[in-house]
Figure 1: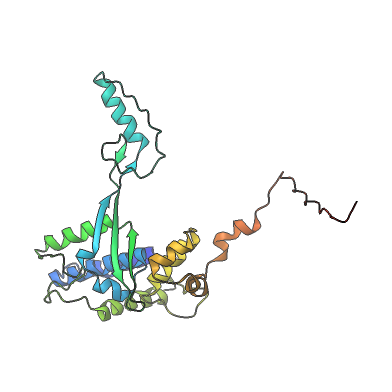
Figure 2 (figure 1 turned 180 degrees about the horizontal axis):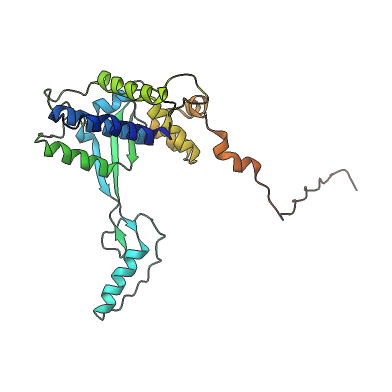
Length: 270
């Protein structure tokens, strides 16, 4: 449900802005927790159970750096203003390339988060790289602004007003169903064209996998990250919208000569 993400966000704002006078901290916490929870589900492919059991100690954030030609030009200009000539013997990286060396010219911060998790269904541990470092930083800041004491062994989405218990998957599911049903009744959210089943929390996992299949992510890598076998990915999740890949099937190679078939050499032919 890639297109549904924007609709979900709009519906959340629409419903929650109606009750701004309600300032209970518990309500504010749940609303922010729910939206952050959904974004983690959409961008990691983790199951609802995995996300609810996720702890802070299982998240590692690293600054891998990225190359920016604009920033490199600015830094060179600043050196030249001071009369310093910049000589760069190494080849210039491509725009956006990872730059681990902290001292390299043109380097900008690029944060990547690595999530360690174990899926109950397979009992196999796996690590998920994702672009959620800034999201986790904002969530941590939000919790501290509420004067919550956060420890490495705490659940990321712990119920801070209920003894830091594991988040209630039932309440998250209930809120999800309420929003999806409302969008569906208004005709704004259509179901998956290849399935009659309603969108569930697991739809975020399916969306993650389908998005990566459409982006042509290596299927063996995707299988490792999602905790599925390659066969399961092919059998269950490759319900792709063929129109998004129609160009591959309908492209015409203009001006390209047909390569002649190789001639067969008969050993018995004199």
